[in-house]
Image (cartoon, rainbow, N blue to C red; front, side, top):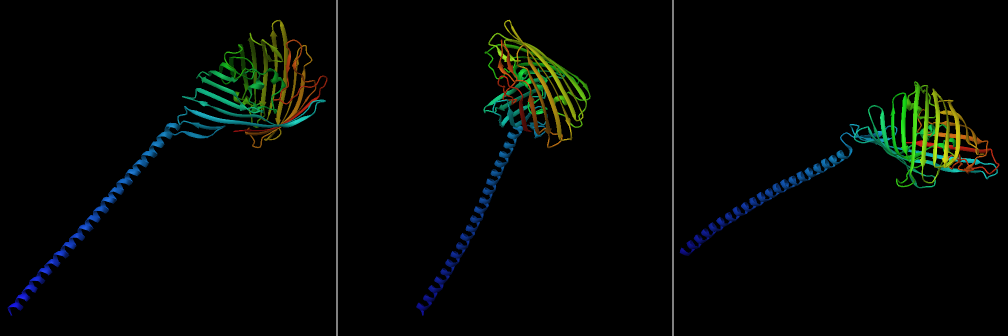
Length: 441
């Protein structure tokens, strides 16, 4: 009985102890699970916070980069910089103090030349390929222009490369390389001529581009300028070479309703205002070095003058000029002269017909020229010179000479640029057909 009671007591005690142990284990297990859940929650919370912080840092960095890029672009373009097209592609600051303008010119041409007993010739050429940069810096009074060209035979060349300062009283000075203002036919752009190409008179007497300085003044009715340069056709030369002192002086006087700018063209325009522009120029150069060719002579000194008149109105134009020069080489002199008259008339808003006649003379030499020319201009878009098709046909009645005569005479009527060829001795009656498509941008 005692044993049974004892055993029952031990079992009861052990059961009680086992029950308490199980309870403790269950409690501990529950506690561990709670701790695990809290740790997991804490980890998730910390990860999200870390992720949010990382995202915030990334967004902040991205915004910073975008703003920095915007600042860089702003510094390059200026606040509110403008770009577009207005007679050329342009980029300008909002205040107008900085400007870059880009223009281009393409003239593609086909020629046919029949020169007496010589074999007739024909073919295509890229007569002019130009890219022009112009504009101003600091303010609109500080101007610049750079024009580069690509020749028919390849290679590039510089025409304009100058700095110009304009003043409020209508005056200016220009320093660099620029076109010399002697012949008006040459002053007018090659893109705004009446015929396909400038005349043989221009070929012999133009000054072309040179390096130097120009002073000028103008108002609505009068323009005056003086140019001191290295001389005719002396572009892209070094300073320490052949020394030439050359002056060109020119004055222009306007009458009528047409403005000075209206005379930039030698073609007709529908609705154009009527006006007359008279011009007179004087040239003089001398060199102590080797003589060079100008005005149908190879001399060391030269002086000359020209008078021109341009008359235009609604759908028509007339242009004429005369030029005379005297060259010297020691005691030897050579006079040469020429004159030209031309006119155009619009038969409709898109098409103009024209005619031209010229004569040139080298005194004392059998080197005279006379040419009659007719042709037409066609503009696909009326009133726009951006695309123009020009075709003309010319006849030279007298023998065309090239190069030397007696003394210092040296005829310079013909060139590959205008399409005329030197005739063989005793031949005359040369014919030239030219057609050209022009594009400006």
